[in-house]
Length: 458
Ligand code: URP
Ligand code: ZN
Ligand code: ZN
Image (tube, protein in one colour):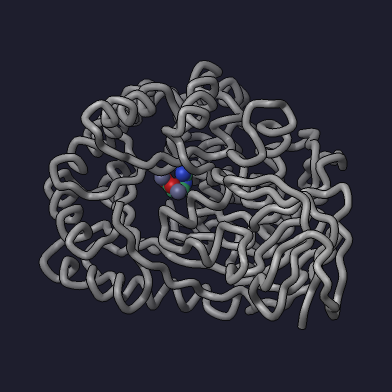
């Protein structure tokens, strides 16, 4: 099967030019002006932008969490991802404390394998580092292509590891060329604040926000950077939300250290005033919480300065019924919000269309940098001969409105209801096949494949 995309404005992380793209099988064969080739299918991209399929490196599908499961399965979540121009996701396996990493891998494979529409990969969250766990790291990297190891500095008793475990994990992962990622907030401080507010009868969604002040994230981000500096490990901070955490990364650069940072679309666009709505604020109960307008400005600046390399989603949806488990107690509201379907269009609309970032920066943030940092480049995240033909044909002129009544995620509300978006992912190709065209899904469950990843050195 071959596809020819004619008259595209091709945008990559470094280039912006007019060309045709010829795809044979799963990969890009050639790129050039007026290519003299015949193809089984011709797609006219006149007036459209073609960029690499999105890579969302932070999603939680079918994840057991806070006594329930996130409401998007691998099937519904990856299908929604494709509708929104994301062709690859990296999900998190969570080790159960007291059990092995391999045990968790098997459990996650049981839910994901054969069920995905988009391509997918896994980070491994190490929640219980011990002598046995340490021995598993090398095999996961070499045999399974799981090269990134997630840690939590919060969620004590379920996911959190202490600083000693963090340091040891960093040393082990470094030995084998992997990357350590972190949910960087100070779990002990947060737990005390939660207990204090609850004991005072302060139980509305606003107190979720107030129990995780900016300093809890700034402190943990700095501590993580310090431990990465001491051990020499490659570090990546997930879902960064605020000025204080960004400054911790900025300070690390002063000693010539690199700490990668990811923010998520919600932290760029939404703010903590939403928590004043009770009970509706539960929709945006996530950790870390939404912050203030000054933090949004700091994150946009961090993007432009190159301190923030990736914009993900931390997609972790829960239905309204699930959220209402915490109707009378914010600490019981399952943490997370739905966004997997709208990251690409929201970031174009709020970033590129509003002149905050260039189209090249957009591609870096949504695809190329994740491919590089997580060991998939140049197979993913670029438009070049030999790369997987994961492409979005994007209409920058088409406006539409986000709504739960039209989205594809398995959740009965939208965190962006009524949001007007400039630009639409019209046609999405997954490894050389039209996967979505004008809102119509063209691929089957199971066509999304597991992607094993490489290690790389700075
Ligand atoms: O609220 C969130 N972020 N839920 C998912 C788990 C995590 O911390 O990333
Ligand atoms: Zn987290
Ligand atoms: Zn997360």
